[in-house]
Length: 81
Image: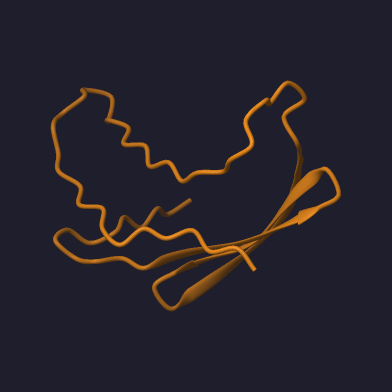
C-alpha cells in the first residue's frame, strides 16, 4: 500500500463528520484538504464513562527511532448541530 504523507510546512484542513445514533457514534467521513473519505463506522459508547463533556485531542506519535519533529496545530473547532 502506498502511503502519502502530508507535505511539510503546509496547512492541511481536516474535517471529521460524525453523529450520535442512540448510544453509538457514527463516523461518517473524513475530509483532508479537498478529498473526502467515507468511513461509515459505528462505535458504542464507553460503558464506564462518567464525564458530561466532549473534547478534541491531538496526538503526535514518533517513528521507530523517536526522531524529533515539529507540528503546528491551529484553529481547532468542535461544532455541534
